[in-house]
Picture 1: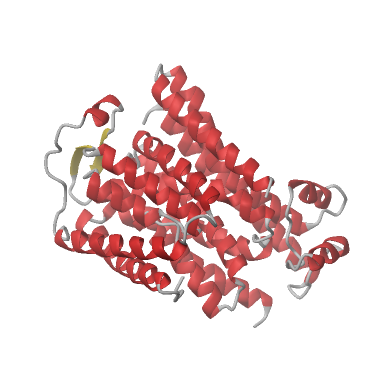
Picture 2 (picture 1 turned 180 degrees about the horizontal axis):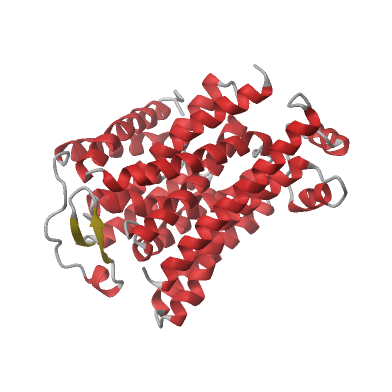
Length: 282
Length: 131
């Protein structure tokens, strides 16, 4: 394939990854890495470097729009990011001390449980009245946004913040230890534990994933895993996709976003459990 | 939208836009000079990277990028690499600017939380640089 055609094909793939990433609060890496390696035959190291760039580009494009529209909650994002970046740093220092396979299997089982919970909540548009949580009150973990799909203002407040914080820390440790992105876990922690509206969860995750990815970007760059010619069409495509995705997500109902999210965590649960048995899908 | 959210949103938008513009200009320059056939435009970097088993067009340090931009005509791949580094510095800058933003609002708790995040990010950069 001519180099220009090759780069254009990567750009088109990245537009799709960026659109999905902006809607679902993921970096698009779970889509990009297998496609770049299996379809385009790109070395796994460069594919992972491109994935880190795609996460940051999605986050920059989507979070800027979501902060303006009020869907992304900067306080909740920063509060939880404190736990996830600290966990990621700890995870990175534990590499070699903990058997990754055991963790992957546990993570796969935890995700399988999340699949069941998400399936049960599939028709829930908005969470009910939140219970009292002292941490949520003390740290102002609440907000309001105008829902274009419901055509009304939606007020929300986080609950079970301690569990959410612990899940974020755990996701950060796994992210640092296993070298995986953790957008899906961030969304699950906000949606399941903290009972935030699904759209707020994915939009706030978009803000957070850029911060977490920035923590590992320097390491990938220093290792020579980021190829400027390869990551350029990825960044351009993902940013264009994020533009499309943010506009689409604002008009979607929470149940639709959750339905789109479900196959992603089914795939992740299977992939993690298989990794636990030594079979790598991503 | 609070002032902190406005600043974070603008930094993320303009940081992302400026970074990908630089990357695109670099890619176009690379195409013009090599016709999208060239392996690399800098012989020293090709030799150094081959020694370490890396691709020819990869930069691994800001110093290397500065070298690529320090002569005329500039190395277009270095321009793309500069855009790439600016892109991953963008979220760090957004959180960094949130520190004085929250403090000005009188919200010391979130000023502190933002400062802790920036501290952990800087520590991870330093650990990464140390290998």
